[in-house]
Amino acid sequence: MKNIFIKSLIFVFTIGFLTSCEDKLDQIPFDEFGTENAFVSASDFENGIRGVYANLVSGGLYGSSDNGSILTAADVLSDNVTLATVGNGRLTKRYLHEYTYNVNITMSTMYSNAYSLIFRANQILQFAEAFDGQNKANIVAEAKALRALAHFHVVTFWGKIPTQSADANSGLGVAYLFEADPNVEPARNTVGEVYGFIVDDLTDAARDINESNPDARMGKDAVNLLLSRVYLYMGQWQNSINAANQVSTPVAERDGFVGIWDDSTVSDNGLIFSIENVNPILNIQIGTAWNQGVPQALIAEYVASKELVDLYKEDDIRKEAYIFDATTSGNDLKAIRKLFGREGENDGVVDYKIFRASEASLNRAEAHFRLNQSAQALAALNEVRTERYLNPADGESGNALLSAIKLERRLEFAFEYQRFLDIKRYGESVQREAFGDIADGSGTPSVPLLLEAGSFRFQMPLGQRTLDTNPNAQQNPGY
Image (tube, rainbow, N blue to C red; front, side, top):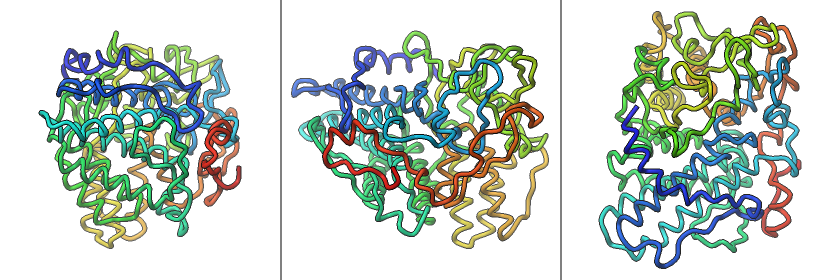
């Protein structure tokens, strides 16, 4: 990966910046940073924006929290994994997998960490209004992009997705915050309003952000990729295509693809935005939410569902990259390789891979199909398939083409923060097969097997403490 020394410097500032205050974050959560004297010089703003990025690797976002981290929640909630009951796993996030979340157990850490990031981004934007120094436009663009990203993560879990149902845009979204006010008691914006604000922030950011920024920071490709995803979720197909077309990073090549996930590939190979997980600055064991131990005696929290494993063809390089054979208590497992560890290691310490170029191709493929542009959709789909298979399929049309696009999206981003949200935005049900947690499909199946489309449980509940401390917070229906 890229130069460790540069990336380490980016996080030096954050050592004293990441003071935990989650126990106090009962309302809209914030932490304290910055006074009138905190942002004076260009270097102050550079340090400040690095601090905002630091929130991305906090426990509830891309960190290692068991309480709903973005790294694992979208797969735990979906059909990609089966809860491992064999061995000595901790049954991590079982409340998500079994849809038993309620006001007393929800993804509160993610909610808190996202709004902490938003608070920090808003502080930079607030102080930048009086600043006219070097790199101001780029810093403001990064702050807006990060603010949009945090709101996007929250609204996709706590609100409906615009394409999910006809009434989604008028439903409860989340509070979109533009000021760094620790005493605010905001009401929730509608879903449509939130997505509109996200687009505004990302459009501004895409215009003003540097083509590339120092390692571990977003550049123009990252912002445009996120904007393409947001437009896809909104059903604005042409806008999604236009944003994806601005992404210049090519799809990861087949050669070296396996090494992306254990950090042995020396080039970025399709990575648009990643953060190096290095010792002593971070060194976070993000993989322990999936597995602990060695392949010969694995302690698994979840295993790849047999349904998913069987979808990978033998010549699909992703099968080797994402899944490995393991044993526990004499039982064979299909274990999750993503996040397992660097080459030859099993400690769960690997770099954060947040945005990849293959998403731009798959976004375009789906959006072209929705616009009845089958030839363009197939061409975009094949940009990914030609780098994953030795003998890729080709030539689908009609519903078969849409099924192929959905399949490739599932296979490409398995264990990578998207599956549940894709099912949700399609307006479909989560339908798990009745296979158990052993490699051959025996063992204990996940329960329940079905989350019906339209269920209120596609939206997370606000925590009781949030409801108690913010009189304007309105709970989602059903809870």
